[in-house]
Amino acid sequence: MISSTLRLVPVTPENFDAVCAVRIHPHQEHLVSPVVKSLAEAYAHGPTAWPRAVVDGDEVVGFVMAFLDIVWDPAADPEGRRSGLWRLNVSADHQGKGYGRFAVRAVLDELRRRGDARAYVTFHPGEGSPEPFYLGLGFRLTGELSGDQPVAALDLG
Image 1 (cartoon, rainbow, N blue to C red):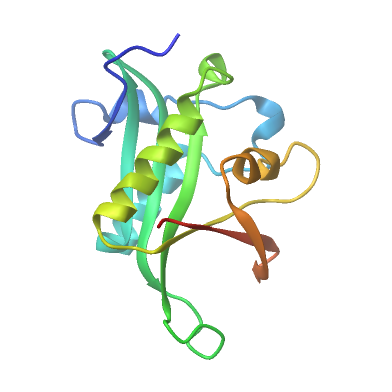
Image 2: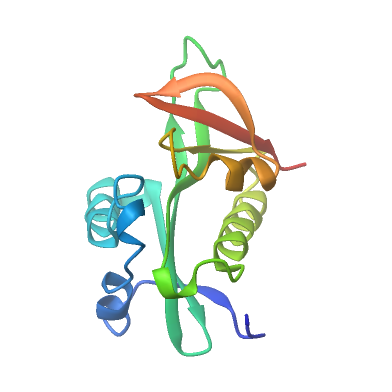
């Protein structure tokens, strides 16, 4: 059961080990990178990355990272900048309890606060893909690919 103290918090020296300890189901490992890789990417990409621990009470139950204002393909997208969901990891013991839905909605709220009109997400296709999860939250496929991953978008208005 999700508590009333569910929130996203920055990754800090105090919660770093707990955040890195978030482990998804083994059958999902081909679908999403581990948290430690996400934190390395956040470090490498600086202000473009927005990494957060998903915390329920005092317990870290997941990790989410947004990307902020990345340059897309100006030829294909005249606005040329996009923000959205980069990574979502919910601990295997806490999946199916609404934590992922909360984390995505919290990221969408942050993007709205920053003035973004649309949010984007990519995912690995195939068996076990999170595609139904994202489509269930209102994302719609754009027909674009980012590498070999489909791109989906959600209007934030």
